[in-house]
Length: 242
Ligand SMILES: Nc1ncnc2c1ncn2[C@@H]1O[C@H](COP(=O)(O)OP(=O)(O)OP(=O)(O)O)[C@@H](O)[C@H]1O
Ligand SMILES: [Mg+2]
Image 1 (cartoon, helix red, strand yellow):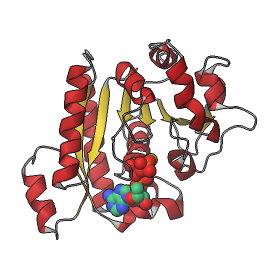
Image 2 (cartoon, rainbow, N blue to C red):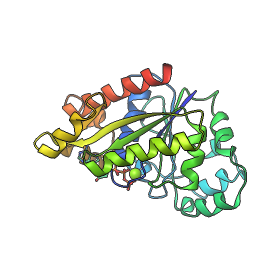
Image 3 (cartoon, rainbow, N blue to C red):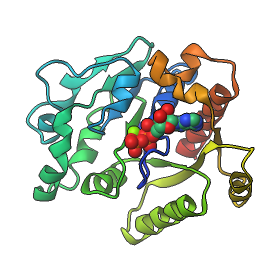
Image 4 (cartoon, protein in one colour):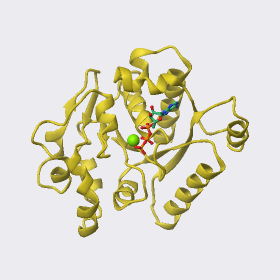
C-alpha cells in the first residue's frame, strides 16, 4: 500500500479536485484498490463523490482510536473506489492532536489498511497544522497543487524547507501547477520556471465537478482536464514506484 497526501499550506488551490480525480484514476484506469480519505471537515471530496458519513459514526472519535477507522469506510459508485468520509467532528481534531503525544498514530492507522487497499489518497485541509505534520510522517508522497504566481511558488519552497527541517525521512514532494491559464502572461512566465512540474489547466470542467458531483472522467472523459489528471496520475504512480 502506498499513501499520497494532496496538501498545500494555502487554501483554494485545487486540493480536493485533485484528490478526487487522482483517486478515481487510481481506481479505474489504474485498477488499484483505492481509498480516498477525506480529512478536511469541509468534506468537499466526500460531497463531490455524493457520499455522506455513515450516520452516527464520527471520524474524530475513530481517529482518536475509539473505533476502527475501517468501520467508517463507504463504497462509491465506482469500482475499486471507497471513501472514508469527512464529517463536522473533524473540526475539533486539531485540539485532540495538540493534546496527544501519539505522533505515529496516523501512520499506524494508515498501515491498518495495508491488506485492503493498494493506494490511499488523502484530501488534506489547508495549513501547516499538527495534523499536517502527522500526515507528513505517514505518507509516501505529497502532491502539492500550486497556482502559478510568485507567491504560491514560494509556498512550495517553504514546504520543501519544512520537510527538510522536520527531518522527515520521507515523503517525496510532487509539486503540480494548478489552474494554469495559458492566456495569462504571469502564468506562462511562472510555469516556465518549472516546466517539468505537471500542469492542470484552468477549466470550467473542473468547476462542473460540483454540479455533476463526480470525477471529471465520469462526465467529460475526453477533454484536456481529464487528460491532464490522467497524466498526473501516471506521474504519481511513477513517483511511488521509483
Ligand atoms: N483547474 C481548475 N480550474 C478551474 N477551477 C478549479 C480548478 N481546480 C479547482 N477549481 C475550483 O476552485 C475551487 C477550489 O478548488 P478545491 O476545493 O479543489 O480547492 P482546495 O485547495 O481543496 O480548497 P480548500 O483549501 O478550501 O480545501 C473550487 O470551486 C473548484 O471547483
Ligand atoms: Mg479542499
